[in-house]
Amino acid sequence: MAKDKIDVCSVEAVDFEKVERVRQELPPGTEVQAMAEIFKALGDPTRLNIILALAREELCVCDLTALADVSASAISHQLRVLRGLKLVKYRKQGKMVYYSLDDRHIEQVIAAVQEHVNE
Amino acid sequence: MAKDKIDVCSVEAVDFEKVERVRQELPPGTEVQAMAEIFKALGDPTRLNIILALAREELCVCDLTALADVSASAISHQLRVLRGLKLVKYRKQGKMVYYSLDDRHIEQVIAAVQEHVNE
DNA sequence: GAAACATATGAACATATATTCAGATGAAAT
DNA sequence: ATTTCATCTGAATATATGTTCATATGTTTC
Image 1 (tube, rainbow over the protein chains, first blue to last red):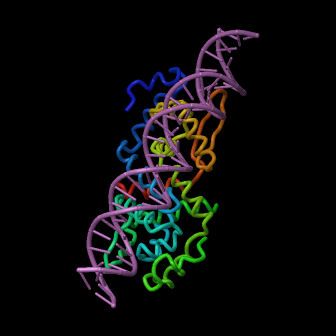
Image 2 (cartoon, each protein chain N blue to C red):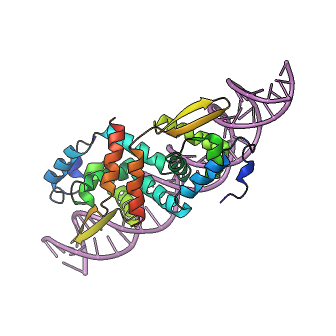
């Protein structure tokens, strides 16, 4: 990352020890990036609605379209994103494709954020 | 929201009862929106790094600049977003401004996502 | 086999967003 | 008071992103 961060502020302004200590406690950059991608996925109302709905029941694309109030195409695009992040899984049955959550942590994540919002 | 979602797919394709049941269990739209905003805030690597750092220790803007490896201006812009969402609070001491987390739920949220990433 | 339907995909477009740059503010030091 | 410094702010820009539209794929039904 940065090699010369000592000159970002004047030397005496930064608590250099503290910065180094915190830096070592931070997750590696790739992990932060991966976490940010998950959060970004949940940061879109359409995708969040999909996740919230699937947290209740398995649903087909058509049902999700009815729930999220956007076009089936938009839902499909967003489901691809969620699939790519291993947040949802699917099961084909004839023409229909049924989606469900593929992660046991996500519900805790959502519950915690919901608490924050409802404080 | 939608009043005529019965025609999104052909009538027999959607499990209408199921959709209605799930719809009633979903949080109200404003709450979903608020949750999405929190997730979106955590979805940017710069902001996530700020949050992760502040989860360890109180830090001034200058320290955060050194840690996140972007300009002080960029940090300041992002801190404003986090302030607006009540995710961080600050304390002035002379020229310096010290930031810290302002939410007890966020650490659980991050821990859960971290588990998902490290599975 | 053709038609109807659920879902997926690619291109296009319009909007949102993160950073940089230049300059403003306010506090400490000289 | 003037300079220095930490932080903030607004405008500008480049990029990312979500939706729509048109079309493709695969499955069922007739």
